[in-house]
Image (cartoon, rainbow, N blue to C red; front, top):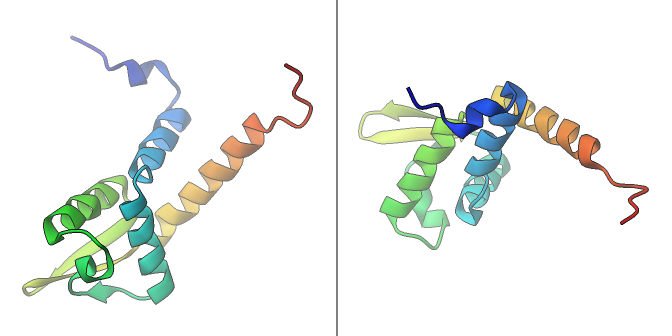
Length: 109
């Protein structure tokens, strides 16, 4: 059995890395910003809001859904997308904690 190298790190770092990876593309950040700005679930084609093809936007939506940052609910032929508020709270907590840990106020190199 081959273990992934990520298993060598604690679960908090694994979760943080998974969320940061989902944030690692400007299109995904724009999707999150758009959903946050609308303050509601969006029915329809989010690709109209981005300078990317529908297929590419769908790939980014899939990554955000896998990370749990957005929710997508099928409604007939359309999907309703919205932020997952609980996961956004987790992301904020993880980010704040990590930044506080690596803060380098008195760094001497």
